[in-house]
Amino acid sequence: FDPSDFRIGPCIHTVAAQFIRPVTEAAGNVSWALMLHPDGLLCDLFVTHSWAEGIFEFIDKVAHSWPAGAKHAYCCMFSNPQNLDVSNLIASPIDSPFAKALQSAAHMLVVPNRVSSIYTRIWCAYEAFLAYSWGKLISTASSPSVNFWPRVLRMCFIYLFGAGVGCILTVRFTVAMFFISSTGLVFAMVLSALGSLRGTHPCSATMYGLAAFELGVWCGNVFSVAPEVFSGWIFFLVGFL
Image (cartoon, rainbow, N blue to C red; front, side, top):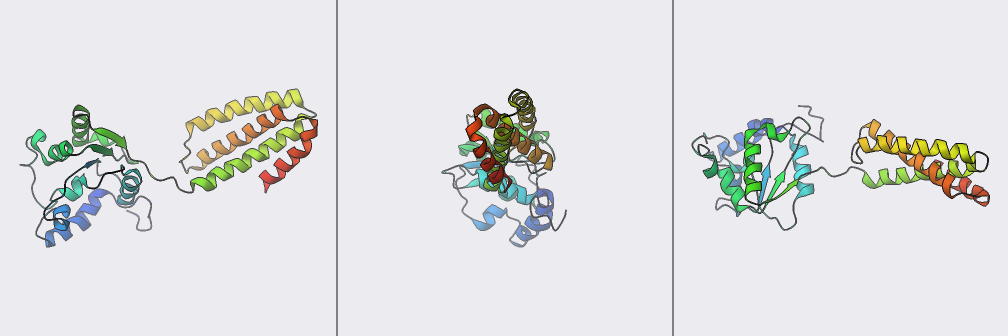
């Protein structure tokens, strides 16, 4: 893993091998959960994941998506003893610690990752089957949106810029600009539908910027009249600045 990466982090396999196992071994080979709470805690949230995600990615998604009212979670990497052979505990899946914890929980939180579907792991598929069969509330964890409001404001300024362009050009090129901006708006919105507001990829940002600009041009063409050309210049300058 990349030591300078503070967004995804090392995968759970690496964290278990290099951190959880050495620490819990020194504590007597117990699980991390029992090391901290020897008497145990009542499980009201079951976290299912495939171990392919990075630890920072995992923490961000679970913390951001933690259900209201939930207090204690079962997560296999912390709840199962990582230094012991647990094959006898999972020989009967319906009687396994996974199933017992899920039966106790009211909510199951699914933690996806950037590498592969968690349902390529048979245990995750089985946990999903049990949760659905038992009528548990199932939700998918998501990462917090980074710089959400600055990006919203940026889109608003791009919209104002486009609105100003639309107002200014409408007076002389009403029909042509209406057609061009309407076509551009449809094209931009289709492109934007392919992106994600939470995405940070430059293509995604470009798509939303284009959509906001075209929306502004379209609205400027639709709603502007000659006296509003002055307003168009104001929109133009505010959006540009």
